[in-house]
Amino acid sequence: MAEERKEHVLWLGRKIASSNKWLRYNSSTHEFSVASEYEIKVKVTPMTPVESVKMGELPDAVAIAA
Image 1 (cartoon, rainbow, N blue to C red):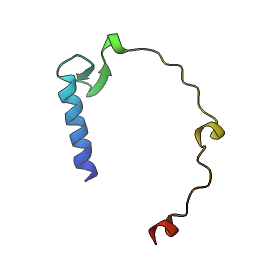
Image 2: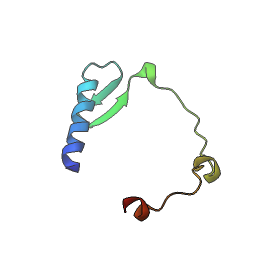
Image 3: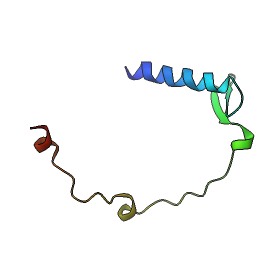
């Protein structure tokens, strides 16, 4: 199943890239790249654990399944 999903995602990527509008595919290197007009630098600041996890107490999976 995972192999089929991987193949499908790659097929979709190549289909999108065939328009050469947003995504590009290099058949020599087998790599995808973004079209130059959409290529931007994004400053990413990693979140601290306090910022990234504010869910409170998580429920017990066994109790939910019962």
